[in-house]
Amino acid sequence: MDVKDFCSGMEMELTAWKAKLYDTWRKFDKLGTADREKIQPKIEDLHMIVEELSGRLEQLKVECPTDWSPMKQEIDKGHVDMRSKYEETMEEIGKSSPVSIPG
Image: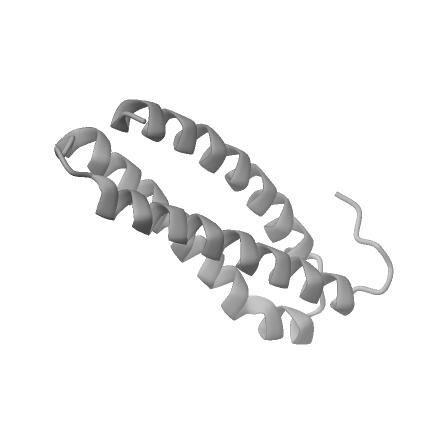
């Protein structure tokens, strides 16, 4: 796989993740103060992962290194981390709001 194809595919996927995370943050904002404080670290982790992945992709597009496999491995790991943090966060939000939060 060439770096441009990889970056293009990851950008599309990252855009989809940003939409999911936006919905997560909207649900998070509707929780009570105590629940928000409990879940806040997970939300911050998600923000950091998204920013880190975005930065890595931008770096790849600008630098176009000959051997970009180490960076690809970091991006792939970040993607896996983001997925697990997202699932943990949604589980916590679900526990914190026994009645489904619309949106």
